[in-house]
Length: 96
Image 1 (cartoon, rainbow, N blue to C red):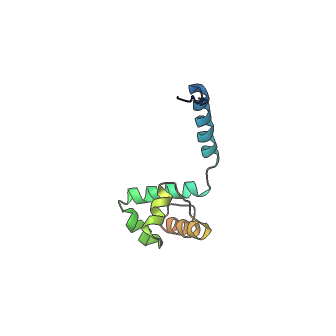
Image 2 (cartoon, one colour; image 1 turned 90 degrees about the vertical axis):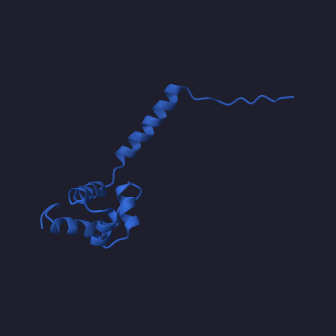
Image 3 (cartoon, rainbow, N blue to C red; image 1 turned 180 degrees about the horizontal axis):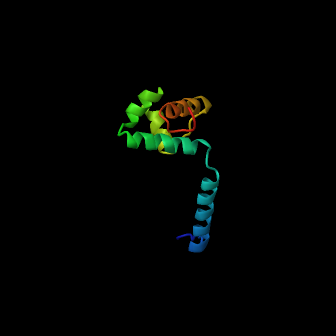
């Protein structure tokens, strides 16, 4: 004998609206360091250096730079300070 399970299914419209809400909440929660990381990535690409080389210049591990650039983490306050200093010294971020 087979038992029947009733599984509630979401309609396609309901599922799409839930996903849009999740995406909107991600966009609304942008971190102040996002702009800093974009500038860091732009510097890396324009100067044709690897993430490893960039990490050495800033004084962090490669994996740290990789996580920043992939959006998995953001720099803490001390790291953000050193990134800003690094970019300012190169005339890329704010005033020297």
